[in-house]
Amino acid sequence: MVNKILPILLLSVACAFAAPTPKDGTVKATLKRPANPVQLKDVHNRDVRRWANLATGSSSSIPAINADVSYLITVGLGTPAQDVDLIFDTGSSDLWVQTANYNPKSSSTSKNLDETWTIEYGSGDASGKEYTDIATIGSYTFTQEFGIASTAEGFTGVDGLVGFGPDDLSVITNKGENIPTPVDNLYSSGQIGSDVIGVYFQPITDGGSQETNGEITFGGVDSTKYTGDITYVPITTASPANEYWGIDVSSVKYGSTSVTSTIHGIVDTGTTLILLSSTAVSALYKNISGAKLDNNSGLYTIPASEVSKLEDITFTIGGTAFTLTPSQYLIPANQVANLGGTSGDTYSWIGSLGDNESGLAFILGQKFLENFYSVFDTTNSRVGLAVAA
Image (cartoon, rainbow, N blue to C red; front, side, top):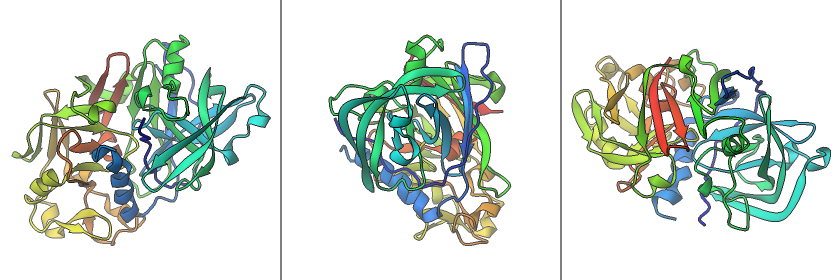
């Protein structure tokens, strides 16, 4: 099996807190994003490298932290629990933690499986030994198989990663079997009623770099976190997007101007940007006078004289229009300097994925999902989207 976990952004870690366990058969967790965001030039490079190998063919809620370019979720491992803040990623399906952040000898329930593992990603790799132990999310516990990374190039300052993609993406084993994700284990143990997660993100708007402003609901959705109805679409049949949380987008429009016809791609919490194929990006930015690629960051800049003239960008998914206003697809001016951009310049969160057309023409990452509630439904093999509350 091809190793499919690709590079994840380097972030320093802040602590998450467990939210109260609801009484509706779901579990909730908060998401958070830590301080010290990386530079814009690294954000684009990281996102493109993350999917480079793929493109070429090679209900319970807990808090989540928005690190501006990535989100973290706190999971307890072991008995007693050792809390780790893990990158929350729907584009992979493994849980692994650095040796510095979890000690199996300090847990009375850890079990060494006498297996080794290696995960390859765009800028290096991670490897180590495989264990099982008790995992805790909120007040719920379950047995989880995971890796302890003795080496993890490119993950300095990060406790580890937890994937919530389809479990056949898992590679934390040298025996080739699929490893259930935490939501799979919560479902199979009867603690949640559906193998579903609902995800709520919020953008940072005040220039800050650390906020606890997101939520994951395991086993269902949180109706207070979205407005209107959820539009559900089946996993696309187009390869390679169908191996992930892949969907079809029937059109992308800038104002009333069509940028693409039907394209296939991926919805992914582990990607920061909104990425389109180079053909679609060119078709998009030719509508904006003076828009140009900034070679330093890999992102597009918009002349100040054109900002007030910008139009909405609309993605039609499952017959529903999901619209981004200019204020939603532009990097807030008070964040540009913090992210290493040129103060006074206007940057767009929408960048190029490269020359990918068949089966992987877009990635709807965090900067799209911060505006919409998303549902990843393993039980029914579908993705849901609604306008975020």
